[in-house]
Image (cartoon, rainbow, N blue to C red; front, side, top):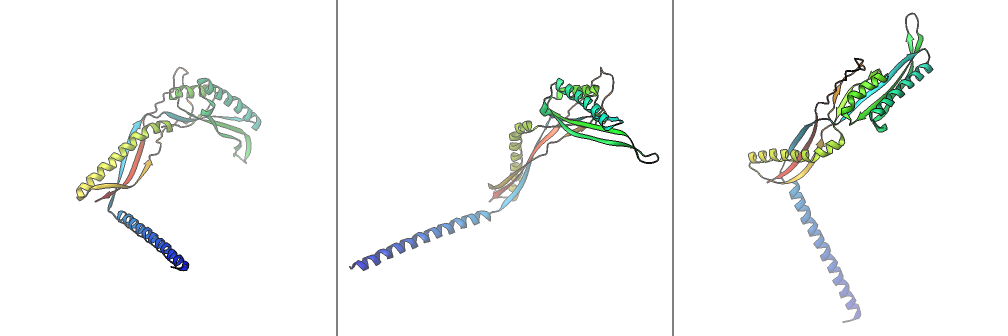
Length: 248
């Protein structure tokens, strides 16, 4: 056999090998797509699960402010600043840290008299701090000592569940929510005369951090011996899941 014939035979063998490899790959891809399509078209049922737990909130937030009126804006600002500094010093003396005290509102504006024509009779200076703390046992003292130091605007108190506490509860609530969904799905499947054979998709929705509010429009000005009673009550932490099951 000539050299040219040998070369042609060699190239034919290579071409046939390439064709066989491509055919094998194509057949495998078709078979895999067929399996995926078959699974995608399987019957499914969807079910939600829910779990919640009542807990005592471990975090509180309240607004403490000072409002002062004076003849000039400078006088109002200076007097307000002096009183607010005393209030903040009292808060820190109780044990609050800088990160627990945040300035939330500062303003100075004229006070008008509208009897005959609009005239400025003075100026009002306001300054408020937002206190956010886990030291719930100190709330009564925070309110009472702030009022004694000159705070005359104490806003609504809200209690909430901190992220740390929610994380501690998350795993238990997740398991309970999934068990709830599974139980309801099994009951439905049994009623339909089918069986659950797998899970297609699942999603989780964590409930909002419930807050309990207490209104305190004005600072307590009662007898110094009396302490302002504060009770955090209960809050709810919840998780819901949505699961889609394969049935057969």
